[in-house]
Image (cartoon, rainbow, N blue to C red; front, side, top):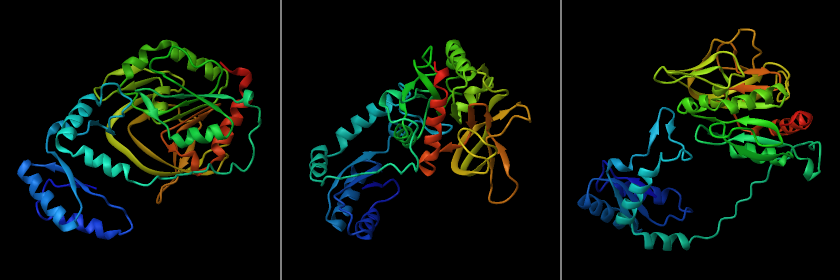
Length: 348
């Protein structure tokens, strides 16, 4: 158990003892102290904790700014961003190797019993259109520094529903993967990489061709932002984007965050009109300047008040700020895959 000892001395032992006794079935093996002011502070807290609990303190980490976890406007910087974590990793490695008893820590870890975890996929209820492995449609999923937030469970369910998954980079790749039958534009930070995305004109053309061929395109949050005509970043700079949707994405100072219950605004390849799903929003941007008659994806259903239109369903393109977990409604994965089968004649 890691304890924040930053504002405590002997009283840390009371917290340690409380956790130890709170759940006797939990095999607590020891403690690490965090945010320690210095050698004397660490030794004093460690002695009190060990005396109270009879368990070892395996070391402590000092109160140094190098151990502050890198973050920005939406929280932690994703680890897929090259270089964003290297200074922190190097500093953490130095401090851990110097202050923690790694031999004892590894000894305790090796003594732990094996953990068997089996999470079966839910029953889809109906079968996908083909059982032929050679006839599995290919869904291209955006995965790079700018686009990297897609629930892994969604990918698992799409595979279980009969699709093959390949990852691509809207930031770096010149084209979509060969054989693409459907596209997922993941959430992420397109505003941070707007200049680079804007420069990738060949990907803009590839996505335009995919839309013209009626391939299903599913975009969440950052994916929606990149599909508009432009992004205005936090410094007021505007960059052209992929342009499959009208209007522009503008960064603001207001955080839009929370769980959402959403009702499908109309029939589509993904949802039937009136069906409800649950998801979440987490973004600073707004989508502005689009036509009022653009068909919405959802009506958001607040606990109190009138429903609010959100997102867009335009042909085979579905885009929204709401992040969905397909696990809550596995039919979404099946419908996505079946729609990909229907579009195979127009594959890239």
